[in-house]
Length: 270
Image (tube, rainbow, N blue to C red; front, side, top):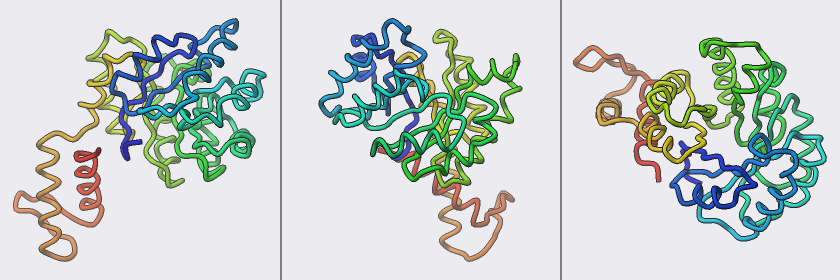
């Protein structure tokens, strides 16, 4: 997996032809969804189709979003999928406690990504993020969280968003990726949402259609002005010691230099 995954493309597990297109779409990670995208009477078929596909290693990292923990579907998925060569990670929906993560961690060696989709899950974000070394990331599931909180406007989710960003950082995890933008035609809205998410500290975003991928990349990759500024900061920091100000008045200290290094690392990601 690239050190800085920016795009996580979801595809429904009961539609193999859609999964095949997703694998060829250029996303950093493909997520085969066995939960929300699959009707109850299609769960067994989705699991079987996913197992057949992922019996062999894939060129693109593939995660599987399981069904809710504790359901018979999730138990069967854990038994069937976690030893397959093509599975790179598991996304656990509706996690509300570290104990849920631990039960999965003892059953599989795969990296785990917890999705927080309720108020209780958000409140326990740090405990979930530090539940086990197998946890590599946390993120919000905003559709379910909206319903749980009764939130209508988008601004009502900014506190949970910041909460998850802070919890991930405190746990030593990568910054979380944003939840999906559900309107695949609204690319301007997607771009605006990504800009807002980047300002809050997110890194990358989940997508539900290939057309969303380039919008997410443009929003999260640093532009020429950001790269030039970062290079200027690092150059100045290597010629002097301690805090200083650039000729244009910008103040530079260790935190500013660290941010500049991160910007250049992101710009040159493989």
